[in-house]
Length: 287
Ligand code: IPD
Image (tube, rainbow, N blue to C red; front, side, top):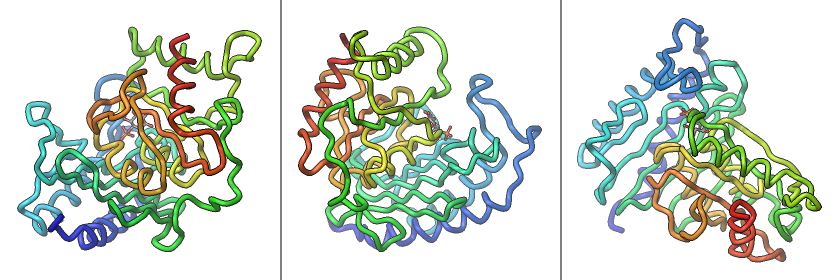
C-alpha cells in the first residue's frame, strides 16, 4: 500500500500513551458509571473523554481517513472499504471500574475492511503490543511476538490448551446459552464428553485476549458478541505473530472484522496444525 503504515503506527503509539495517562490518573466513581444496554455493559465518563481526545487528534492529523469509535458508533454507518481508524478508548471498562488492572486502549487501522495496523496499550502494566501488516508484531516495540517461541509447549489438541473466554455483556437468549454450553463442553471431563482443557481464563478485554494469544501465553481465545473496535488492533498483532482467526461458529475460515464471533489460535511450532485445533474446537462445541 502507498500509505505510510509505519507513520500511522507511530502516531497511534503516541496517542495510546497520552490516553494511558488519562486512564491511570482517573478514579472512576460508581456514580460516573453510566450503563449502556444493561447492568453488565458499562461506560464511564473516561471512555467518552478518552475517545474524544483520540478522535480529535486523529481527525486533525489524518482528515482523509474515517473514524469508528466505540462511544460514537452509528449503526447507520457500518464499516466500509475506506481506510478507517477503529478505536476502543477503554477495552475492559468493567475491569477499569473495579480497579482490576487489565484494561487497554485499542487502536486499529483497517483498509478494505482488513486490519493493517494495531496498537494495544495496557497503561496499568505499561504493556504495549503493536503490529503492522507484513512487518511483524512486538511487545514494547522491541520483543518480537510470539514470546519465547522456542520454549512454548507445542499445542497437541484442546486438552493441553489454556483458553480465553468471556461472559460479555449479552446475558440472555440463545447467545447466552451457546456461551454456557461451550464453557461446559470445553471444561468437562473427557469421559463425560468434554474436551477437558487445561483451563479457561477471562481477562475482561477482547484486545488483551488477542494479544495474549499473539504472545503465546494463551493458546486460544473464543468469543461471540464483541465488536470491530474490540478486535481490530489485536487482529493484526495476532496474525503478525503467526496466529490465525477463524469464525467462532463452525464453518467459516475467513471471518470478517465485524462478524462478532471469533476463534483465535496461537502459532504452535511443532504442535498439531492450527486448522486441526479449530476443527477440534468446532466439533467439540457442536457435539
Ligand atoms: C468488552 C470487553 C470484554 C468483552 C466484550 C467487550 P469494553 O469491551 O472486551 O472482554 O467480553 O465483548 O465488549 O466494553 O470493555 O470496551
